[in-house]
Image 1 (cartoon, rainbow, N blue to C red):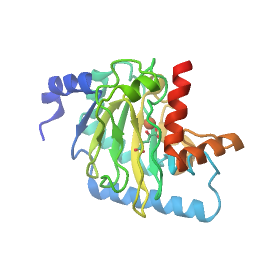
Image 2 (cartoon, protein in one colour; image 1 turned 90 degrees about the vertical axis):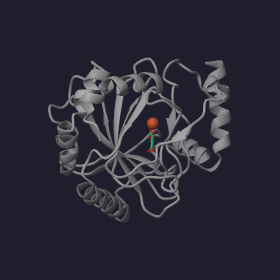
Image 3 (tube, helix red, strand yellow; image 1 turned 30 degrees about the vertical axis):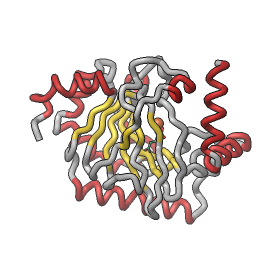
Image 4 (spheres, rainbow, N blue to C red; image 1 turned 180 degrees about the vertical axis):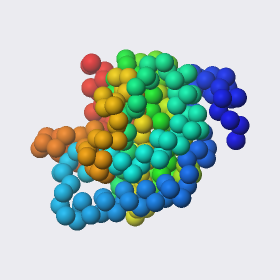
Length: 257
Ligand SMILES: O=C(O)CCC(=O)C(=O)O
Ligand SMILES: [Fe+2]
């Protein structure tokens, strides 16, 4: 692959136009395979011991997680490969260290509703690293290129007719996207969870001097997009079992917003 520094013009212009870019083969595959194994084992253990919360993304099957201090090698490799230099060129707001996270797409998950992450008015950069080979079967993320250029309401997005693509890729591939590009997590039809690492710069980055000290440095599963109270659980259940209901609800609500 061409070193990133030589390719910066082209990457910047693709990023400006599409809202995302993909850099194949950046992070070491064997180390990521080992990390994916640890994340899956820890999830199985936490579930077995009844340590997981109810609702909070467990019904739709899309959780956030902190990938543990043992995942620091991913950050170091991104740094060595010049990915963070590229990020600082793409977004001068990315000053601090990123928040370090991971998306666990669980077996039998349902489609998320299409969304932008955070608030459309304050976009930030997200670097995803595939921790396993990812394709349609295990829920490669759906993304709609070019949707970051205006602040769509849900109904405007739904009627925009812009074509969606799936971010299929191999372990070690990196994708860099703006939070304001419309996207969603998709069903994982395999029997193994799909972990995907995420480095995010919301509000300029992590508040910790070292984001790997979060959660005592231990792999931790966290809620995603849904709360844990009864009404959140009812809503999550309804969206998981009747995706069209979710689309219709968001469509109507966005008209009156
Ligand atoms: O896991 C994925 O593929 C995407 C998840 C996502 O977009 C989210 O949880 O906000
Ligand atoms: Fe998202």
